[in-house]
Every structure is written in C-alpha cells, then in structure tokens.
Length: 65
Length: 252
Image (cartoon, rainbow over all chains, first blue to last red; front, top):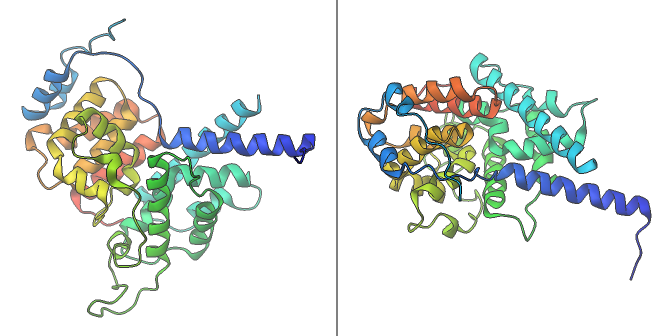
C-alpha cells in the first residue's frame, strides 16, 4: 500500500472538498418543516393567482415534531 | 477550516458569475462573460467550479440568442466540463447538469451553416434547438423523474435542473415538466409560501415553457414577486430573467 505524503494527503482532501461542495451546490436540500398547506397551494394555483393571493393568508409556521 | 473556506469561496464565485450572466442577459452583450470569470488573475479552480455549478446557465445568453458564441467563452466552458465530470457516485442532478453542459457545448461549438434541409446547424437557429439533433449525447437515467413522483418532489428536482429549461429542450426533464404542468404550478406556489425563492424561480422557468400553464396562476406577477423577495440571490435573478425572456419570446 502506497502511503501519501502530507502534501499529497492535503491536496487529496482539498479535491474531495471541492467535489463535495459542487455536489451540494448542484442539489441544495429543502429546509425541513410542515406547513399544512397542500390544499391551499392547489387552490392558489387553480384560482385567480394574483400577487395578493400569494401573500395571504400568512405563511403558517413550521410544525414542530 | 479549508472546507468552510472553499465552500464560501465557491458560493461567492457562483453569485458573481450569475450576476455577470444576468448583466449579459439584460444588456445583450454576450461576449467575454466567462473569460472575465476565469481569466488571468482569477482563482482558476474556484472559477471553473462556479461555471460547473451554474452549468449550462453560464452560457445562457448565447443559448437563448440566435448567433455564434465567443470562442474564448466556449474554451473556458469546455475546461469546466472536462475538469468536473460526474463521478460514479454522483447524484442524478449532477449527472443531468453535466449532460446539459456537454449538450450546450456541442451545440454552441457547431459552425453556423447556411439553411440546409436536415443540416446540422441552421443559421439563426437558437443553440438550444440545434443541440437536440442526433449526436447531442445519451441522456442520463430518466427514472429520477418518474411519473409516480409526488408534485413536491417533482418540483424540487425540476427546479434543480432549471438550466435545462430552454426553448426547444427535448430532454426527459422537459417532457416531464410539459406533462405535469399543473403539479409544477402547485409546486411553484408551495415554494413561494415556503419562501424558497431559488426553487420557486427554477420551477417558474419550466412553467414559462409550458404551453398549458393556467392563466389563473398569474405567472408573470409571480415572477415579479419572487424576484422582489429573493433577488439578493443572483441565481434567482438569473432564473426569473430567463423565464421572462422565454415567456415573451424575446431574443437576447
């Protein structure tokens, strides 16, 4: 088994980090939270979708647990 | 410390590049955007990585326009394609993103020939359409966007692939988006309500191409709202500007 020098290990670690960063940037994860508004979302899409409707009612807070 | 530093540098580089692309979209000056990002004095690896993250959108002004691309920009873009190929363990999103880049590079690298029936390049034809002729490459596995997926997951995944949302895009994500416009509209509204502006902007871009978007959705107004609320992220600006251009059919 070939042992890497400290410089080679550092370079390898940096390369791994870059690939990880790129993968994370390409597919950001959604913030978790339950908003209980699936029905409202469908209704907003199907009814008159003015900016006013998008703004009201207020966004429900994420449900804990 | 190095991981944090690299990640923040990449984020800054992506934001800067997206801002340059937005400027090019708005001004019509398409040349030299990538050269300015990855030219002499730039942080080479991070600059190329930023192009990789933006993927096909790094050349979006050229893709939407009906003219040749700057050869220097194509050279830089090609370097980013070759520097960051998808690994065996890469996500489907990464594979689709890279595939889109290779397709864009192939389409923009073709010389613009006179209008010949069935020819490989038609003068004045947007690059997005030219890229779908035979030889554009094998698509990644389309099972990642299968029909049984929930509208929430569908929207999230399509939003991630927003750089593929260009006129004439005949790939699997485009066909899926066209077949599930109503679900995508639901997902757009959900993203707005969750204040996920990047996802909303990406979804809106697919909706801008859909022929049967409900007029009641108010997509144009929704784009204004998303841009107003999420415009500090230049990628949001890029997607909303692209969606508006495609909605109006305006050439860059």
